[in-house]
Amino acid sequence: MEAMLFGTAATAGGAAATAGAIGVGGAFSAWQALSTLGMVSGVMGAISQGNTAADNYEQSAAMNDYNAAVARNQSTSALSESAAAQSAQRRRAREVLGEQRAGIAQSGTGFGGSNADLMEQSQTLAELDALNLAYEGDMKSKSYISQASIEDVSAATNRRNVGTARTSGYIGAGRALLVGAGSYGQGRNTNYAPVATATPRLLGG
Image 1: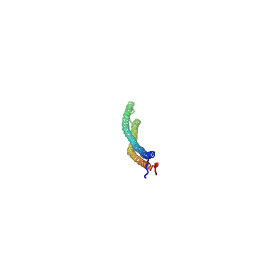
Image 2: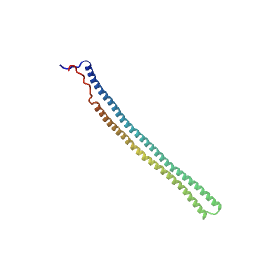
Image 3: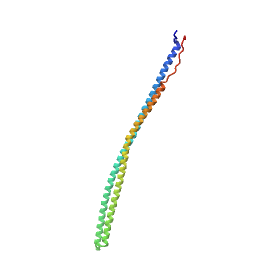
Image 4: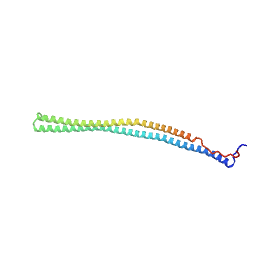
């Protein structure tokens, strides 16, 4: 006679089988959700980090451009100020030389000899003063140009780093995707392992 399940034994066996199926499926669904969430979070975080770094580099490059433009303007201004100072110096020198001529003329000593040497010396010193002003202006201008060149190099470097930062973000996203996929697969294999269930008692055999 074929053995049959009756009463409490049959109910217990069915409940155990159902609980086992639900337990495996529920655990897998939870692991799947957590793995997917972690993977998406890692991918988005890597991309966001790369974009943030790239934005910072872009802002730095823009600041470098601004600083270079300011330095070039200062270079031009230094030359203009120097030219104005030289003109003022030569104008004052002409006034002084004119006063010297007038004094010599009033003295009646003539414009030769020591008087000629004095006027020549005054002219030479006045021109040296003007040349010193020109030199100072030129040095200031070159200094500003050097600063502008440094800013140009920094701007170019920062712009290269923009692409590098974005690429690094995408590489990090790919790494997070691979790690997440590996973790997902490991969890899936674990949750699909055989589950032991109680064997119901048989009546009549």
